[in-house]
Length: 409
Image (cartoon, rainbow, N blue to C red; front, top):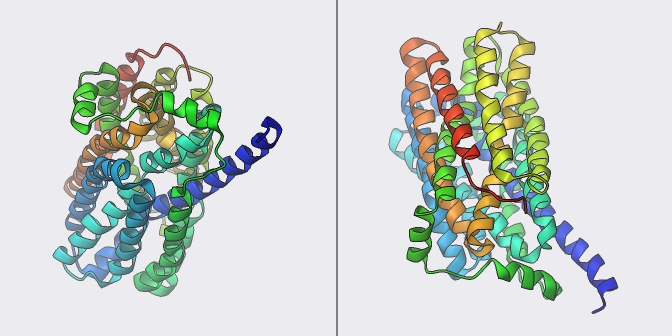
């Protein structure tokens, strides 16, 4: 095949892989980022208390992270397509089962294990681990930013839709409608996992240079000795704490200020838009600047944003601006973290090591979801937990700038 014909083919392949990945990650985020929107309906449906459901959501945060390195290992041994399909089936099952959970045990099984396991198998690391070897090396940072940005679609489009479906038809109606696009993740997963014979030899060669397979035990042994990986895990631990406060408790916090669920859903739609902007910008910057500086800067913006909000008036304008900046700095940390992991350990190990880093992220998420509920129940306010987040976010910025990253890739 001539170089003239190869370039259009690679463009089409890159476009198809990007669109499929965007759909998967957008649907993943539409579900896991909207637990806060569903919270009151889940409480009413299951007759469980706020603290009980918060604890179940916290367990879900932990399971979401725990399964990612496990599914990453499965993907490296049995194939990415199988892993993604398993995730799609578990996610679909979890969505359909939520309305039938009438006890703490049943809700724990569904919302604490099945659904988080499904979304964990369709995580960013596994999706990028599936498509990265098929992409031109120079396109990877941009595609990474676009795929990560698609998480904003889960809030921009789906937050108001899910809220509207539940308000008008109840939890059962809302979850059954949500199950329709969730079911489409199965064929999309199969398509992304297919081996493409038209992938250029140069692309395969370039990706193979940094993708030599390593024994899993040896891989983790080397990773835990690497300061870059240690600093990334520390930063991701604080990031999980921060993100869990947003996805699980921000709608309740806005309600405590007297705002309606519709207002909270609107604010979350703005969060989705700015998530897209921040993620795309982050992906582009990672291709031009040192990734550690991109990561540290986004972490460093978080404590400033939170402090200004806590000290300012609580109006519709301020909660919208606050939510917008949270979105801008939220998922934007993912491209530099995944980029540094892939750069350091190779793309073939990306799903496993990024998955483990995300497990650490979700340990932070566990404490954010759980302690956020305890804080609000005990004090009637989230101020103390946000102050803790300020300290943790500042620490994440410091350790990120300490990473040795010679140049952008």
